[in-house]
Every structure is written in structure tokens, then in C-alpha cells.
Length: 225
View (cartoon, rainbow, N blue to C red):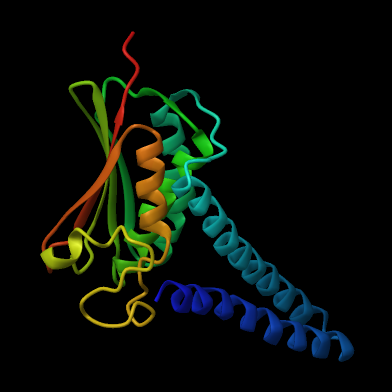
């Protein structure tokens, strides 16, 4: 199943690139500059998507093998989250929704690889947008609990059945409702997020009820002054 799903994920952008390349060639031949620029932009986007899939597979393999290329340093979590939320807010608003940030943690300094941790948060936001319906309502929040910080992403999506909640962090997990591609499946994103949390000495979990949305929470140790 993993190979089949991975092949599908890679073939989709590869097919789009092939089609767009043909359309671009036709537009260039016809001297249509406007369409040529449009196809070129789409082509670049599909290429980035394909590159992203490949990079994620390689990075996940490295994490699971215990040989990650992480660079840990002191990081203030809130500024990173503010930047990420700002970058994603327009996506939510373009769907008629909203994305809010509620930093409630008084202590948010931790040892982390900023690039990897940012990717983990982006994976959660990508899922929230995919499952948020026509008007996604998403909230990113933080809270201290003992020696840890809880980073949560809440959405107003359809929710996840209890029987699926323990297994959605597996690579290309199929939801009970059917094929992963028909349901915009979780792909590698949540599995990658789980491994990132683990390498940072933390965990990731989900709380959800069908019809009531979902809350994904990453728990990480903070630095004490």
C-alpha cells in the first residue's frame, strides 16, 4: 500500500508537468505571451510540489532511520508561529475562512531545528485547510503545561472517527471512509510531524469527534531560565 500510494502522489504532479510542458510549447509556438507566462507559473508550482514530495520522503526516511540532519538551537516559538500563521492566513481567507493565532504560553523558548519544526506546523495547517470545508475556521494556540509547551491546531472540519485516531500518524494511512486519494488523505504529513516531534523529545496527538472538528497538539519541552 505504501508503494502504491507513494507512486500515486508522485505521478499526479509528474503528469501535470508533462501536460503543462506541452501546453507551454503550443503557446510559445503561437506567440501567446500571456498564456505562456500562465503555463510557466503553473509548471513551476507543480515542480515545487513534486520536489516537496520527494524531499519529504527522503527526510522522513532519515528521521525514521535515526540519522536526521537536524540543527538544534535555542528558538522562541511564538515569532516562528506568527510568521507561519501570517503566511497561511491568506489561504484560509481565500476560502472564505479565517486563521487565528492565540499565544497563551508564558514560556516558549526551546531547543529546536526551526526548519523541521516549522514543517511540522505547516503539515498540520495543510490538513486543517484540506478538511476545513468551504469556510475553514482554524486556530493556532499555545499553552504551558508543567515543563512543556502545547502547540495546538484546531479546525472545524468533519472530524475523525475514534477508530482512526490512533493510526492516522502512519504513512499513507487510509481513513475508514474509503481510499486516501478520494478523501485528500493525510499522506506523509502527519507521519512526518510525528517523527519531528519525537526527535525534539515530544509527542503529537489528536482529539476529535465526528462532526465536531479536530485538535492536533504537539507537546515539546521548554527551556527553563
